[in-house]
Image (tube, rainbow, N blue to C red):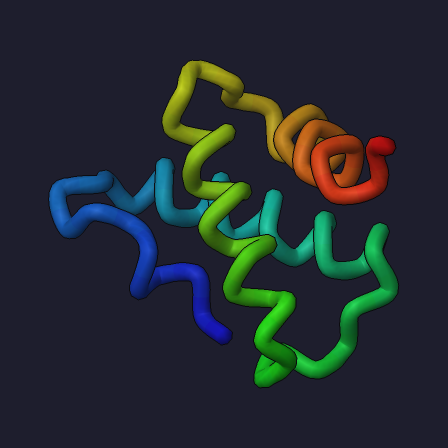
Length: 72
């Protein structure tokens, strides 16, 4: 699942690169290899959600996404 389909088209290339980086890191942290897995769509949407809410660092985005999915 490419994350680009969840990013608004007005996003600049630096933002797209940052979100792609955060997405790749998150998938590695969650040990998700198959980007066709439906779970990766949920991950992509959460990366975009967190990454467009003011969190800039890809590592911080990835940690927040993993925390979201592993809590509770």
